[in-house]
Image (cartoon, rainbow, N blue to C red):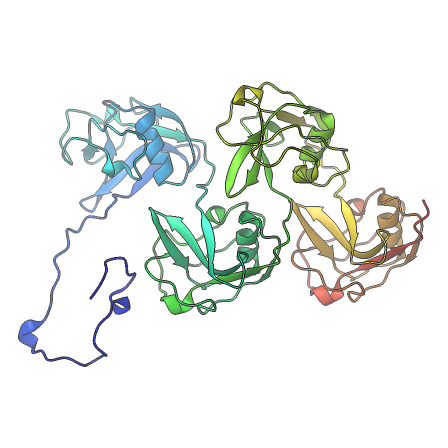
Length: 468
């Protein structure tokens, strides 16, 4: 007996294997339509993966869509179905070149809220009065779809089986290739701090229904799990005995920021990620100190301006922050003083912006788990995340630079082997070699960010005199 939501026939309730009262004259069969539902889409011949000529797969063939009645509502559905964010334009007259083969859809009329283009009213498949010079196209914003994730059956809200919401349904993730980098993204998306473990083999119990993702491969710096590489949705070779889990520290980390609609990645409308959703910042009290923090957090150098009044266009709800007041020394915008999340008296005509020089500035450092603020495990801030430094080649010259950068006076020791406890991933720097005259640790020679042959038992520490 199946409910219809199972991911495999073997998940349905039944008699024990081999137990029956049947003959082969009662063998069951199935007849399928042969057509995928919803019909798959792709964008072809565009400059990015999220723009191009719209093509739909039906009857075992890819075909185009006619531009009759084609507008932003239809484009919105296409962009959503492909996980490409907001629709920016709905192009007509084969603006991305003429397709070939069948013209599958014509007179498509979406409300904009449909989950798939094939759910919108249209003429019957293949019925049209068009030529390929009328092929429809789309340009999407390109931001990955912010699909909700949740942790189930854990001891707290920050541990459990990972489930992701797709096509109006929660489903699990297979543990193939599942590791701490993937868990790091889940913990960040949920505001649960650092990942402490990434257990597989249904550590938090078996899920039911769809297994949505397999072979997930995150870099570790993504803001949401949907930005990570993986097999196509629902494509897997797993069963629920391989459901992936996560355990997070529960300590909230810096909220990610991004700059949108600017001429470069280092200029644009300020948006901050909170409760699994990007939102804007109101320009009340917005100034160069706040802009400085945003530029530093993004590794974009110095702030050159902090414009208000939506200079890079109006965003969409929510407006997350208002009355932001930074001292200029914070390592992330979410560390600045502000009204509670989502509390404001603003409209999107007041969305704050930032322009940065684009020249990378010194990465912030901090000392953790020491008896004073001037002693502890060395951690450095990169790609919106704190990480440790390996003790290979670590010496007094490097410690001198750290103490100077923190205004903590002279270095008194440069201990290795995690004297202040082991940190958690990432390990950002290895083989650090300083002359001792550098202004910041990130100016010293080292392996590329994140490249190392170390474990956290080799985390470097520093003790400073504390007297500037």
